[in-house]
Image (cartoon, rainbow, N blue to C red; front, side):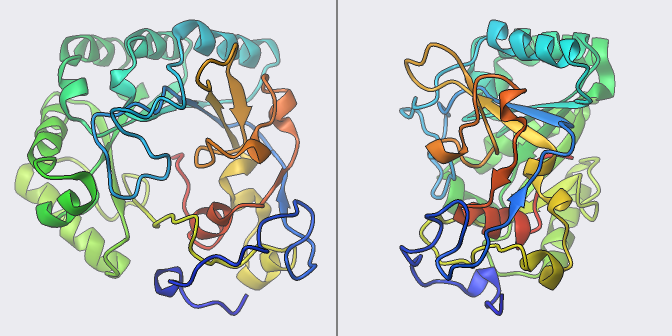
Length: 319
């Protein structure tokens, strides 16, 4: 575990790593994470997006439909399982792609909110959201702060944001964020750490941006402004062993898969499946079954993202 900081790792991933779910390339026992309680259930609404970002972990774009649209019927089936089995789920999250492209998104949000769940939607706040302003206002009126929208602004500097998101992406995103703020929606913001700045510098920069535009987000609150580490599956990172918990002074319960699962529907699939994590949509090793009950078994930390994002990066998509 004597590895350099993640932002200094540029060498290619050792092909012997992350192969065996039980042991590492060095023959050490690989760490696993048990599901202690299903606090958060994520739904990936589909991989289609209005943007093609430079480094999207799920490769979303206007053409990528590897993950099909979920329907409100799909979502309700899992809500029914939560109710039937009295699961302790408190938060339902929606991610993509861009969730507001999915034609059932408003119906899905209504289904979740009407059952009393806190609800989080990850969005770029651009044109797809703008088309749904009226029904979103209606949801706000009925459910208030139980609905949170987390808007992706990769950096407080427009030029750096557009290096990732593409030309002419900054102003539409800021416009969407401002509309949500001025209309009383509960807001979070998601940024990225790819510039090499200190976390304090990043948070101070976002604080200036929010103050300039009257955006009611505390940039120094790690939940209201989440700063995510970069995820590059081909970059070399250390494998996480059982010994790492003590070395890093972490607990398996700190890792996202101890309290969350994600539902996806693969293109042309008959039904959705449950995955261990929001980050591993395409890796069949992390497909855990069609029901939440089937997906309750432990997860082997057998992917570079397990190290770079969750264990060493200390990040979580939930709040």
